[in-house]
Each structure stands twice: as C-alpha cells, then as structure tokens.
Length: 487
Image 1 (cartoon, rainbow, N blue to C red):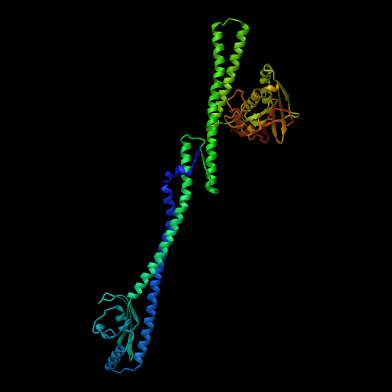
Image 2: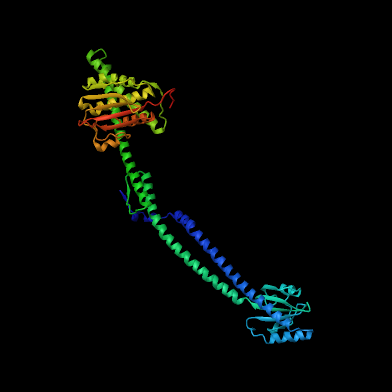
C-alpha cells in the first residue's frame, strides 16, 4: 500500500509546527529589525540635533565676541547696536536673533513679534549667570518645538545682556520622520521576504512530515506494510526510508507472529491428541495387549516430553522478552554436560535410524563458569534440531575442543542444509523458513540468548566441505577463573 502526498494534503494542518517555526525563525528577525529601526531613528535624531546645536553654539560665540569687540561703554550704545544687528540680520526666515536683558525679557528680535516677551527658559537664566547654555523643547509661549542657544554679553566683566539664537525644529522632526518611514519600509520589506521564504520552506518540510505522520498513525492503527513515496534526497528522504523499513519489518513481524501462533497451536495440538488418544485407549482396556500398552505408554511419555520442551521454550522466550532471563553460574564441566546430553539422545536417535558420532577433545578441558542446566538445554535443542532438519542424512557429528581460549562445540548434520537466503534469519524469533519440520521457531533464538549471556557466540552455517548439511558452532570462553559470579 502506498501513501502519496496528494492523498494527504487535506491533513496539512500541523499549525503548531508552522507557528513554532515562524516564532523561532521569523520572530527574532522581526524583533532585530525593529530594534535596528529604533536605533537608526534615535541615532539620526541625535545626529541632527547635535549638529544643529554645535553650529548654533559656534555661531553664538562668534557673534558675542564680535558684539563685545565694539567696546560698548553705555547701555544706550548697547541697545542701538542690538537694534541694528536684528534689523540687518539676513537669516530671518530660518533663524531668530534675540537680545535679552538681565531680567530675562526680549529687548530686540529679528522676529519683531517676540520683542518685549519673557521666554522664561533655562538657557536664559544660565546665560545671565555668565555661561553658554542651550534649550531644546517646546516654546512656553507658542508650543512650537525649538532649539535655542544663549550666550552672555560681557562688558567690563559684567553681563550686560544675552545674545540668543532660536530655530524651529519642525524641519528636523519632519526629516527624522521621513528617515523612520524609510527604515521601517525597508525593514517591512525584509520581513515580508523572510516570511515568504519561510512559508515556502515550511511547506516543503510540513508536507512530508504530514505524510510521515499519517503513515505512522496508520501503522499504529494496524495498517502494517504501507509505504510512502520517497521523492527526497536529504534527511527527509532518510526519514521516509526508515518509516518504510519500519513498516515492512512490522508487517513481517506480524506475519511471523501469526504464523508462530498457528504453528504453536498445531504443535501443541499434535502431542495432546496423541496423549489423549492413547490415554483413552489404555483406559478402555488397561489389562490388554502388553505390547500395545508398552507402545502407548512410550508414545505418551515421548509426546509429554515434547510438550514439556515446547512449554519451557515458550516460558524462556517470554523471560527473554521481559528481560527476566537469568543464569545460575557455577563451575561446570562443559564437556561432561555435552556427553550426558549425547548419551540421552543417542538411544532416541538410534530408534529413528540416526547415528551419532562423537569426537571428544584431545586434551582435558578445565571446568568453566557457566550455567550447566542452560548449556545442557542448548545442547539438547541443537541435537533435536539436527534430528528434525538433518535426519534425512541419517548421521549427526558432534565434537568438542579447546580453541582460542574457549570451549568450542560443533554439531553437524548431513541433511539438505539451510537455503543461503535463510541463513541470516534462522536465529530470529518465530522464524522457520521453508522447513516443514515441527517446532515453534524460537528454539534457536533462546539458545543464542543463553550463549550470549555466557559471553560466547552461537553460529549457524552450512557445511563447507563439499557435502550437504548444517553446522552449529557454540563457543564459550574459558577466561573466567576463581569464584563464579551469579548472573
């Protein structure tokens, strides 16, 4: 089953993802641009104001020095010179020249309407006190934004009056507003471009995420095996590949599990049927034919043992899945455990027409730290597998040896072997491959787990000597000495 972007477009409502993306990516840029516009506006205003102030202060100093250079000796001379200065002032349109007496009142002004008024600003008081001062703000009388510079006029080291320049800030404020609008417009354009590019990028991300989300939701709902069309060659492509692979593996696991349930049901039913059948037969005529009674009891015993083995495998597998599978480690003669297992199975194999050939180790192998019962379980399972899957060869070879610091046990049958394409999966849980032999498909998985807990390896391969058959190689390290640990 395929999942296509077209079929999922209606579910592209991952607004939370879009919002988080825009907040984390676009919002910082917007805030940064707003701060930049504010800083630019404030900086440009400061530049204009400081430039005007510096110019007016320099001009006021020069004018005051020139005025006092005339050597005025009386108030009348001062007043006549002040009146002449304001009448001949050439910049009346942009600048106002005022002469103010020591009482703070305008005596003469290039803008005649202000003559006789009392400006009452801080710069005048400071100038009367003998220092150059300025005022920026609203004119107390007209309410207009102005910049004023007042410079004291000294005669015989005494302040006779104040020379004051006043200019309107209307043009400057207009220019500052224009600068602000230009900066804000550019910032808005940048924000629009960023949002547009982010929206395109987000859509390119959200669409595949929505497809993957829908696929994952359908997989969790039981639609195992669905696949997503992969048109991407980046991290999203890897994500889609992983989702497809997960879906396939879940589908395979589901199929294997269903086959396992069916197989276990069949495997449990077969010995139970045999046991029930012979039990009923013997119950009807308990003192009947002795040969028949012996045969029936033998079948009941064999099938009961088979049933017990299956149940134990299932219990062990459940413990492995739950992480409760443990070992009771002690000092164990592993070769002795192997020989006991061979002795137990040799008679059973003989009855089935299978010969067991055992090659003991050439040298004595010291005891190792291991769980004897679990290792005997491994040997039993491997021998039982050899009879089930390799019994057609009528022979099973078993050997033990000390190799590379470990005890190595090999069990080889002469059956048809394992198809090469199935070899990588034979130790997986529930896997039975193409074999029609009885079994639950978890025996080798349990054996592999037991050997791994011992720090060893459990390998299954085909014979490489030109003959058919499978080889199981079990390796347990001998490096553990002293008091064994409990695992």
